[in-house]
Amino acid sequence: MAFASFTVVRAQDDDEPVRSHHSKPHIHYGKNVLSISPVTMTDIGVEGVGLSYEVALDKRGILAFDMPLVLAINNVQNNSYNGLSNNNATTSYGVFCAYPGIKIYPKGSFGVFRYAVGPNLVFESGNTGSYDGLGYWQTQSLSKFGVMVTNSFNINPSPKFYCGIDIGLGITYVYSIAGVSQTSDFLGRLAFSLGYRF
Image (cartoon, rainbow, N blue to C red; front, side, top):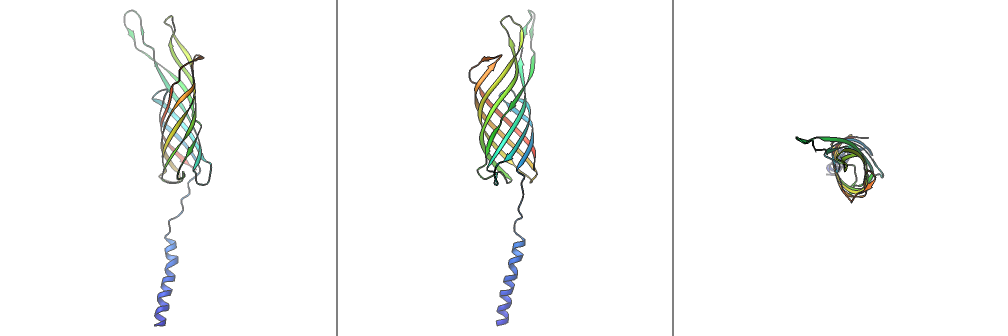
């Protein structure tokens, strides 16, 4: 009986290291994310392309600095009437947009599914166009400065691959066309991103 008891206890002790070998391995997610946004819509227009860099600022990735850059296409209708028919045309202008901001991940950014929210500054600079008082089409400078709040839905299918959707809404503090101040305007950004985490 004593031998049997010793055998049972010994078998139980031998089971402990076996269970430890089946523990879930730790997955290392890089703190940096470099991504491109082939589909980007902004308050400037529905056409655009973006590039973004994000870096975690703490060990759990609860706070992160984010720098999205976007080249937006501003399509302006310049319809005119020449006395016989309407000239329906569109003039396209490029507008550079920057959205430096902070992402706050309530559960940290290192995981498969992660949500973040945070504020962004907004800088937009480029050109637009309109007719002057004499009926001549003219290109004018356009600039906006404001703030927005961005909601970010992030998926990390693997430790190296990243994809996400950013939805941001805000308002301008400064909005001018050809140096003339305009009334406040809304700001918006919708971007689908694919990237590399390292």
